[in-house]
View: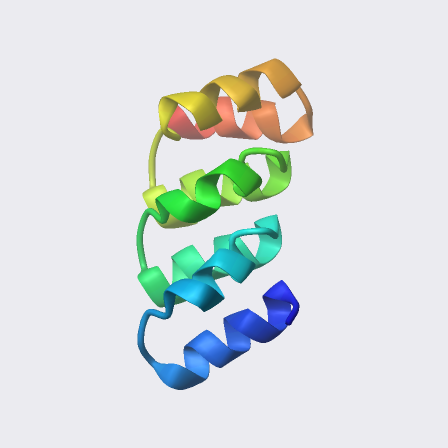
Length: 93
């Protein structure tokens, strides 16, 4: 099962399913969407994979956490120093 399939199956079930969450947590995009629309808040299981993608890290800070990223994600974002880093720094100030 792909992360996309697991995401949609989790939405259809309308309840948290650990096996599906493990699959979803392998992909930054689907982890971000899962945190935003299903968990509706911080989702620690998906954070390691989200932190590897600057774009979704920025959107995770903006739309899910609505503030500064957890330290390990924040530090990764600053180290990456890409186009989303500037937007992120402006957002958290």
